[in-house]
Length: 445
Image (cartoon, rainbow, N blue to C red; front, side, top):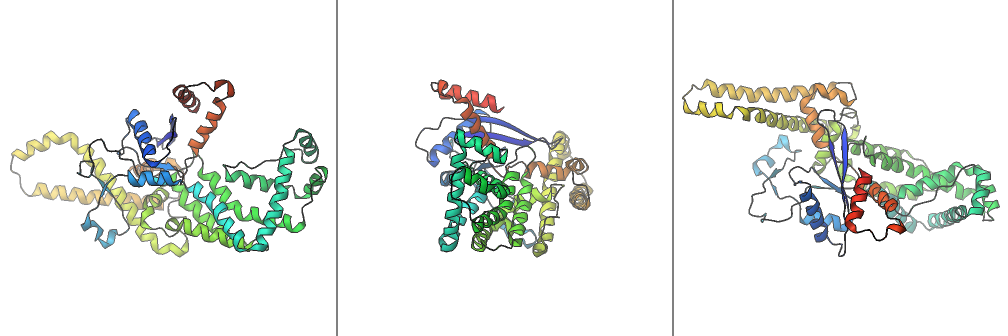
C-alpha cells in the first residue's frame, strides 16, 4: 500500500509533497486491514485525524467501506441546522472525547473518492452499457477495435516495427490495461494517422479499415477527448488544486452536450447520462460538496466565473458560504492572538468594570464580521487571477490553504508504484519488504 502526503505552504501557497510509505500488504485485503495499516503509518509520522484534512483513494469497495466504518464521529448542532440563512453550510464539530470513541480505537480522517477513477468508469462501464443497448454500435465497435488491436500487436514485433517506422516515422502507442487514458491516447494517434492507415494495414497484411470504422474511431475520440483532458489535468501533483475539480466537471459537461455526432449518438448519450449521474452532487452544487465549492471560489483563477447561468440562483448561497468560512477562520486567528493575553484577562476578572467593557467586546465581534465580509467581497471583485494576489487577503488565503490542500486524484501513489517496478528487478527478488520500502521512499522523495 502506497501513502503520500501533500500540503500547501501558507506563505507562498505552493504545494509540497512527500512519500510516506510503500508498505507490504499481506492478505487478507479487507477493510479492517486497510484501516490498521493506515493507522500504523499515521502513528509513525505523528499524524492524527485532527491534522489530516482528507484521504484520497480510488473507488474500490474496500476503501469506501474502510472510511465508512472508521470515519470521524461528527456532532451536529440541531439549532444551527434550523437556521435557514445558513442552510448551505456544513461545518462539523469533532469531539474525540465522546463516549462513542473508545480508547485505542482507529479513527480515520474524512474520505474523498478519486474523481479521475470515476471519470474512467464513465468511459468504460457506462460506455459498455451503450454497446449492450445498441447492437449496431456494438458490431461497429467490435470490428473497429479488433483491427486496432491487431495493429497494436503487430507493432510490438521487431520486424513489423521497422516497417511501421518507414510509414509513420514514429512508434505506435499501445493501451495499458490499468490506465484508461492510454486507450484514448492510442486511439487518438490512429485517428490522426488516418491517411496512413491503409498503407500500414497492407504492410502488416491485416484487413483494412472501412471508412465507417474510421469515422467511428474519429467520433469515439471526439466524445472522450474532454474526459481524457480532464483526467490529465486532475492527475497533476504540483499545479493541481482541489478547486479545479468542479470547473473541470462543468467544462466536460459543456463539451459533451455540444457534441453533434453521426455514428456514435447512443454512446454519447450513455456517457452523458453516466457522467451526470456519477457527478450529480457536483453538477447540482449540493451541500455535501461544499468543501469543493469553497476550494473553487477561493482560488483566484476561478472565483465565481465558473458558475453556469442555470445555477445563478446559487450565487448568494455560495457567497454566504465563503463569508461564514472566512469569518470563522478570522475569529479563530483572533482568538489565537488573544490567548497570549490570557494573564491580563485573568487580572481583569478580579476587578469590577462597567458595562462599557462588554460593549467594546461586542463591537469587536461586529468589526470582525465586517472585516471578513469586506475582505471576501473585495477578493471576489478583484480581477487578478494569480495566487500572489492572495497576499492582500489573509482570511481568503487561509481558506485556500484549508480547502485546496486535497488532491482530486491519488495519482501520486500510482506514480509511486511505477518507482516500485523500477526497483524490483529480478536480481532484487530477495529484498525484504522493509528494505524495498526504504528504496521506494528514497526514490520517490
